[in-house]
Image (cartoon, rainbow, N blue to C red; front, side, top):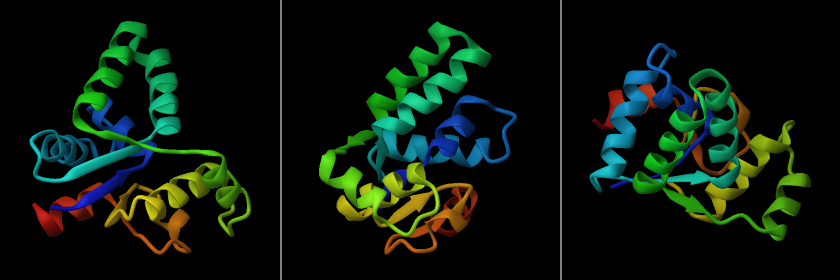
Length: 137
């Protein structure tokens, strides 16, 4: 069983079937939903995925996806201390720094993202959803 922190792009891949790693994202969310792995997400990632999905899929569908994520995944805690860690990190992007700080704080085994390069300074290994599926499913 792996503890996985899912980046926003994985949520979007799950929501939109024609995105690049949609099938892998569906498999990962399924594994988290049935208890094979523990999936975690930052609250900000839920917010960002909802925002993007609402514009393309509509309000109701976007909220339905958020509800589904809340059933399948845990929302990792984010507080002032972690925001300060992220703000002072060597990550070039604050949003990525929040994901990194969260993954390190919850002792995730992996960060699942289509932007693994963004987390090269993290102590938590970042791989793509497809790499995860290829290696562990």
